[in-house]
Amino acid sequence: MEAAKLLKSLEKEDFRILMAIEIGMKRSEYVTINNIKFYSRYKMEETLFRLNKVHKFDLIIRNTSKYEIAYNLNSKAYDLLALHTLVKKNVISQLGPLIGKGKESDVYSCMDDNGKIYALKFYRMGRTSFRNIKMYRDIIGDRGHLSWLYVNRLAARKEFEALTKIFKLKLNTPKPIAYNRHVIVMSYLRGKELVYYKQIKKPLKIFRRIIKQIKIIYQKAHMIHGDLGEFNIVLSERGNILIIDWLQWVPSDHPNANTLLERDIINICHFFQKKFNIESNVNEIITSFYK
Ligand SMILES: Nc1ncnc2c1ncn2[C@@H]1O[C@H](COP(=O)(O)OP(=O)(O)OP(=O)(O)O)[C@@H](O)[C@H]1O
Ligand SMILES: [Mg+2]
Image (cartoon, rainbow, N blue to C red; front, side, top):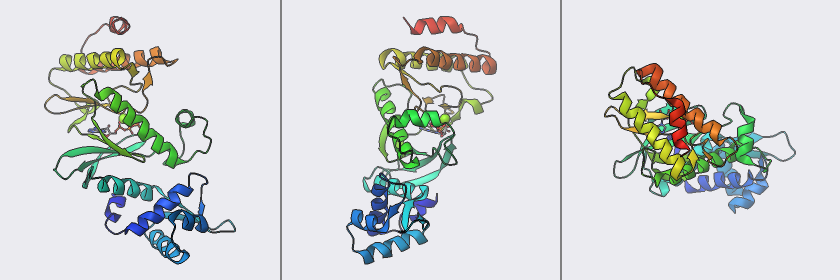
């Protein structure tokens, strides 16, 4: 990953300049040199030197269309800031390979000082364009200023909170380790998504385990996954599962709760029926959730 390679090339002053731009971006899309100087509390000379340097590393975007030159961060810089913080806090020490590319995220493996491996999810909503504006609006609420930086930060926080809530139930969901900016660190299960298995051992057992878990999550944590299916369940060779991708969760008192819950259940039932010939009574399963 590009940002990770730069971690060692930058000095703390460079990070401070990037963070000054980050602060300024809360108020406007581009941040003027004077404001960057103000937020970093550096002298003009140092400010300009650092801006030049991070610009050469292709971390900031220069806007010369206004009277005053201004800059903002690109996503590489944002990745770098998050990684830098996670490394400094000793959460992780080394980035591994890309393990998954979702619709709106990149997931990497990473290692801590003890060699323990985690999954690192980088939110990348609005990477190309804001495809699903309504969803971002839901996340953003009334805040107006639609910046990718902010949206991805909120998304990471939302998923991290969901993982924290469910983790208390001690089920097969990722253990939340830490989050920073648009990145979450969670436990990793080596395997692949259910959808990519041609056959699996004991499909009935796995089917029942999934249904049982989403029922416990619904009845005890009052949460609904909202995007459950064969793409969001990782299965390991040894038959362990991990129910991932909790960004779209809703509470059980959400206006569309029943529809979403039932869609989750139906997705699982249909998938197991079609692929592994597991017959189940969908209505009976749904009814059992409401008891
Ligand atoms: N904790 C984990 N352990 C192992 N693999 C994971 C983990 N989290 C994610 N992955 C891998 O990364 C892929 C993408 O992750 P995820 O489903 O969370 O992102 P996404 O589909 O982009 O999510 P979103 O719908 O929120 O944009 C998964 O399909 C899976 O292969
Ligand atoms: Mg997914």
